[in-house]
Length: 434
Ligand code: GDP
Image (cartoon, rainbow, N blue to C red; front, side):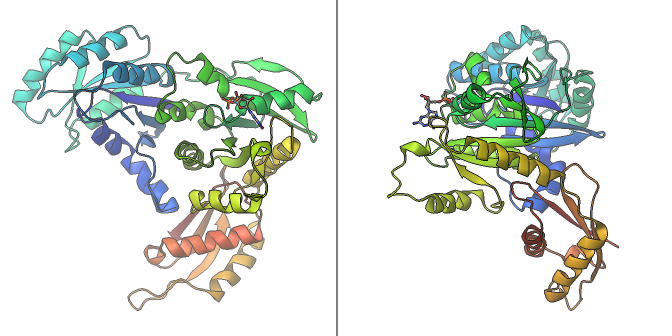
């Protein structure tokens, strides 16, 4: 999957373009989750090609006196993480010194850069846009992010610019468990603790994906790769002082993982950044296990695991069916339990329920509590099934699918989760016309 980063100084229309790009796909995803939550990361699709979009403007404050350092960071993030970079400028303002700074950084990059001139909505402006040749980035694309005109051509160019083979070949098709989390949560310690005592390790494979380190394990008669994302941070040139940057640095690792092992620091709790990483995993329909690390530091009489778990689950709403384990990388408490739980989530994600069993159970569930009648019309669901997709998706065929709303879908999802073990796995529910 290709990653596209949008860069540019504040107020040039990056966010509007970002929203426009992710809109079509978001409409689908959010009808499932019911919530839009990340303003800086989304998935998009054009001509059947899927890609991820990062708005690197993220947490850079939208003022004109934004530090040059912030812009540099933003561009470096894009250079490190993206396959294609869209550089947005504003025809009304013309070339500003900050545009020149960005252009200077981008001229050195070997990755494709698309120069996108915003607010071009008439012939006059089309003429004005010519000045952007002076940025030394070659041809440019004109568009108007508000109306959307020109974005089609920009997207065509974008798809064209994607590298033929975006990924370094994955050497072995083993399940991939990515260890993710905030800096200092204990990701490296967790992996080291496992490696240090684990005699089942077979080999270290470096560089199966760019920058991330894979370690192959053979456990429980089960082979998998543990992906260390801590290394990514260490290699990065910029300091991860902004929450946004370290989250965005795990995008690729998360996208290429099957399961994300989210390590949090027990002494700090479940913070905004942990939440962003969790959403990233959920949005990508990855399995998730949460490890509350450094549990050795928590006074057990002030906080029980039960209380702690309740607190975290509040933050995970509505996707709360997630295994949460209390571990210590230092004392090696419950580390193997954590791996076991991860393997279980992997199995849950692959689980296939036979159509007959699914109907047998779900039709009873629906009968017990049918969708509420709308405008005097009754919704009937007569048939349902799990789709043969890599992540669990279920379709329910109804006479009036438009009347089946989010709360009812959630009811169906909860019933599925009660009956079958989908812990740690996001589920999609679709209602279709029969
Ligand atoms: P990373 O950035 O997520 O890879 O975090 P590190 O593994 O580098 O750990 C950050 C700091 O937390 C280090 O000083 C570790 O020694 C410490 N640490 C990691 N895990 C634990 C733990 O379970 N208990 C305690 N007390 N300290 C830990």
